[in-house]
Length: 352
Image 1 (cartoon, rainbow, N blue to C red):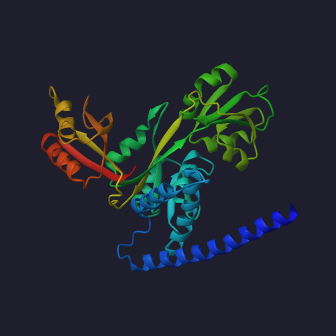
Image 2 (cartoon, rainbow, N blue to C red):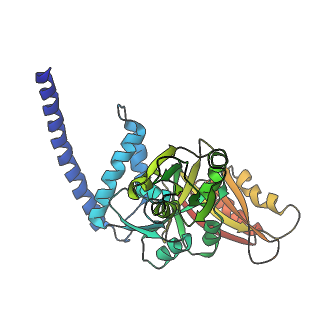
Image 3 (cartoon, helix red, strand yellow):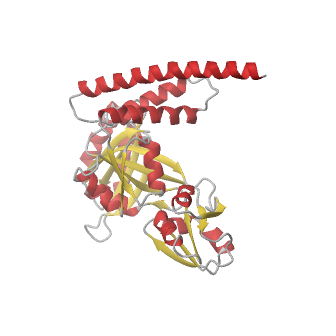
């Protein structure tokens, strides 16, 4: 048995040696690519999406699809950093789901820039303080994040990627039980996502909304008679006990995040385009706006209205469609749409 184990370990060591050589070769090629490019863009989500799609298609196991993606995202992140270590801003502080989404998208070899608000994420990318920004845009339980939609309308930034993150909330506290908990800190969205659980298990607690769940965890680490709703990572970060896991009311609770940049993204082969439009206030106006998509066989995956803030009872509409804005059918649809709408803004095309 010991002889066989030593032999297997020796084979693993040999494979690791070969892997290291191949990784070094890949890293040198990545550096050459960086020196060859002339547009100054470090992060190419369409290229990374193509690479990951091809690798998962070739994967025959035993590693899972998710495992392959996780490994190669780390490889890509470290190779990209040889060209330049990009800076990504997100809604902070450290320990938020926004940070988790950021690392999941870009890998670990980046400069993290936590901010105090969604507005600051937009401003940091707009002012070149950060190369990219990550913001939440909608939750499967509570719907759209209105501030993000408002800023997409008014700011001159592009959507260059999306992140779909399952959200699992934990109840954290310095206490080891809920008996002495009088105060509960959490972001307003999280309080809503865990509403039923709180009403059953903490009916008399004083609920205090805070800017982020990580901030709630920080506050509860200072107060033994309090608890917070946050992630596993926040528990480690602020040295808190995890009293309960998965306290969200919906088992499939998921948040969609957007990646913001100042540059467009080329087609990846499987893309989504987000636009915002306005129409004149007349009968049948909405039907006229969506007609070009049906006519050109472009699938519309989302339609959301928001007050325009330009006049009473005036609205804009956020629409997601399948395809890249350079695709023939999408381009034709958008051209026809511009003839009917009073306002059209392409927010970005990006890999699904």
